[in-house]
Length: 167
Length: 190
Image (tube, rainbow over all chains, first blue to last red; front, side, top):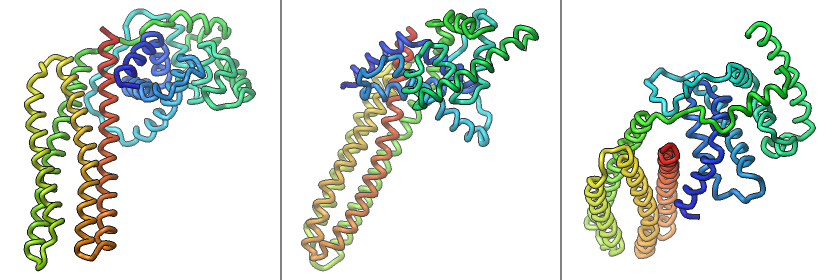
């Protein structure tokens, strides 16, 4: 595959699934979002030659994006101990249009989940089947089922608190 | 709120861009990559020129000082000087080519990419250059009757040089894909 072809494929994938990367970035990073965005893009770019059409492009991109985000969070946690303040030039800027407050709440709660639960809940919201989730995350379907039940219950309780008290 | 409600809220945001690209920040990032690439290209060229000049001169000096001239040592030294000339010509070409890029965001990005391509090509050529140089050294050891000693020494030092060179190539590939991604971002956004 030539570099030009690879770039054309990336262009097409991004055009069709732009929202996917943004959602993963927002769920996994509050600061340094553009770093995670760039890291995910690089990993997707590198993965193009090994894509064999065994799964849909969306599933493939989710797999790459989530695995990258999980590794990135681990690395960030390590690095944050040594981090110094330096002027940041943010590549990505959040659109300031009014957003459904409940969506903002949802992202905040997703961010509070642990790394794997976050992935599972994102995939659940995206409508992936247990089998697909299992293949993306490398966790057994039964384990996914158990985790989903627990996360759902947890999120419903939190949503009730939010609706009653705004927290 | 039930899960179905959360899903509805989630689905409502689908395919909406949550972020926009800040072109000034992008330009800044490209410029910093470009400056780093320039610095790296220049320092690589100078390091290689100095190392090859020094090693070539040392070979000639040692060989002239010793009794019994080893012709392969002279060939090795000549090869090193030829490599210096090759790097010098490439450096001049690179500097000349750098003037064709304008100072726009796209111009800087193309320049940074061309630098990265240049750096990668140079590293690969220098790595390949180790093969003929190694072969000449083996002949030199064979002529001097120290084939095993010279061969082992050469194998270790060239394996080390190859390892270091290859690390540079991998780092460069990563930087190049970062630049390709930035280009992709820019094109997708426009």
